Length: 144
Image (cartoon, rainbow, N blue to C red):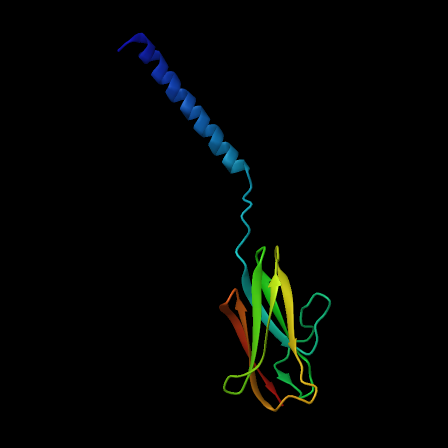
């Protein structure tokens, strides 16, 4: 083996090893900037919400003239997510459906509500929450 190859090959190997170690250290020191995936972590119902869009008193029974609030709790981050609330009565009769585009960067609450000035019929209801079109959570409630 020529002298140049006996000297250059080991030097090249050492250089590659040092470079790889430096890259590995740099990657270990750089914090991950990938946001946590957004998920729905809770769904609360009540007669009112606070300034933070969270239900102030959780209930599952309502009176006919109540405004019914749903607070959808999320965790994670997304620059552009769609939450949809679908309210149904009895065997699935649609009462209302609405959606909001959100861009949370951590724990957040989003408020939905329904009202009926002439009063809700007595019976069983349900609210379903969808995140980007996928069912996320639901709650049954009753008007008495």
